[in-house]
Image (cartoon, rainbow, N blue to C red; front, top):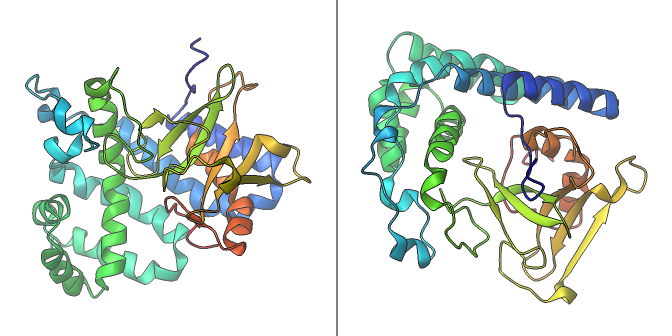
Length: 304
């Protein structure tokens, strides 16, 4: 076992096992687990049924080392894959558990589901607009379904997430061994929602909230503002929790951001980091009550 990296289990069975364990350890989170758990499991199960697009197996894909060295993420050059062929199937699998997770916009999700069902939403056009960053097309599609652009973009982003995670995993080898000293993801440029400490001395690994990629980052530097002044950093944990300081919030006074952190040095079993983050939602709430903001939004920390 490589003690310098986090061991993950991101399979559908692994996600469900992690959720079951979380329910046993923290029964007070039953409602949260029942709310978001089915969506996490459905996303993992959907990825297991997908094959990688041919363009991801193209041997001509390469890393622009000069731009990467200047801090530009990999996808700046390569771009996000066009996954429209599987997008309707993703909607069929993921929209139903989204109705449970986002009860406040259930009606909007049902309208979007109907749009996919009756083909009034064109998956190719929708995905190309999402990948190409053309908001006017997305706004037009949102209007045709009777939803607002913000809600429509959010839902499309959730449907795109499994494809982004698949692409990230398939391209990670291109940046293996490359130095990356930034607090944002070297694959897609997003920030982390959770960090894990592993190995001798507790090396910090950040996990991207958007594409799931994981990278090493200095433990004493803020990923958001790059401040390394220890007097500007602090952390807190729930003293009443059995986990104690193994589940904590690292906060930066300089930029008022925070990051959930889990100490995995004594874990012998694989971990699912999304479920680990869900299990620390009470720490999210406390951090935001103190006036700090998360580095990245998750399905649940935007509700706190």
